[in-house]
Image (cartoon, rainbow, N blue to C red; front, side, top):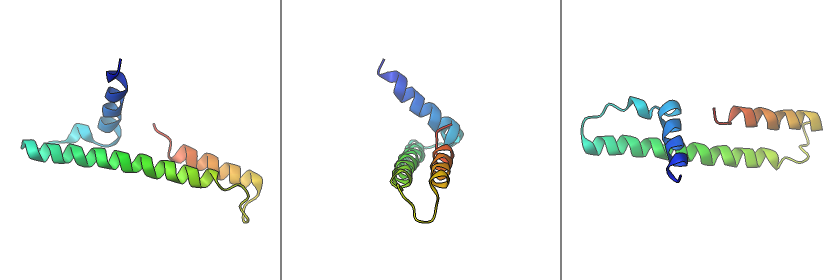
Length: 83
């Protein structure tokens, strides 16, 4: 049962980050390409979490009304949600 979430992450890597298109021949080059993809996946998640945390911390933005702030939060959530 512990394999299922990991396989899901690899599926996301193949679909969204191009892991399925790695065409390197050498073992070391393949490891590097996979490592770079995993790094980008981690950076994307970290930045998405940071941005959503920032947007949700906007309790009373001085330049937006309450409905505009809620719309902005929903827009960011939709923009950075996983497919």
